[in-house]
Length: 397
Image: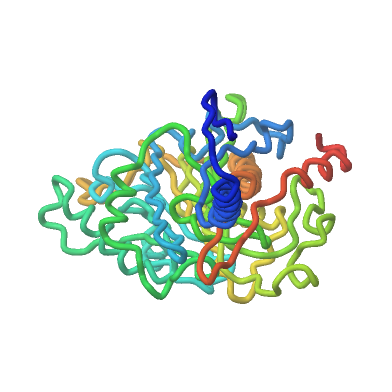
């Protein structure tokens, strides 16, 4: 006699044994298949457990979208047992960005990467498209999608040249990157999905297949808002983490404490992979000071233990959304009269970028979940059950 719920069903002993065996096989299958999925279960962020990185207060959302007008969208691509990739779109402002460009700059911390569109940004100091992040071999498709989006905007009917800005990291450890599964439509979907407000973090979008410090990496974001006495400006950062080193969290040597860090016996020595960092601010910075701002974001990456290894493409894209310094595609006067923030008032903005980048990277690790991908490879999430006691040991909690 077996009871299921409130019912009783009579079974012979042989059938009962078969049912028990089937149940065991079913649960074993569940245990094996669970890691094949990129799960979306909630994991606590650092601030929710009492960890505060830096001294400047975050914005309301603690996200790049705290900078007014900035939107973020994801397209996550998970198919079968070997496709783990995606696209993340950062929309700097609403409206036609091509016709009214934004001041921008790029800093290359280590140039082993394929950042499409970077030379024109370096040359002209402006941004004329949304920013797309994806995998290394998806750059061409991402450019196609971004160009299509730009050409389709009302007012761009006569446009014949588009500087599509596309960043990447190599997610081939978990993803069948040679299959080139990112399509132009995936990029258009990510742009269409972009919205203000909360930003989904972890193993989503362009962070679906990334690995960071030997743990599951992904998308992370954070922000800082300066007090009015220091200008009241906001700096927001979004990162795509796929790099190695020796993990530090708020100065705590977590990687060393866990015994898991690059070039140790317990972690593969491959520390390559890249980190893309996008910095947005409403401070009226010109291209020169935006490049200086971008350099500070790299300092934030260093504070997490990143080492900018030989094969890691580590780039920072920085832009200003300040309306007063927008750049018309067809200016009406030969001389610009826009006003920029003086050098003497930039230090607090620089500090905000350092803090927000550091926290964004840590947020990506806290948010990402264990993922199984190509060749049945399994990348574990950062073990918070072990990390939290370490943080307490060093009086961070």
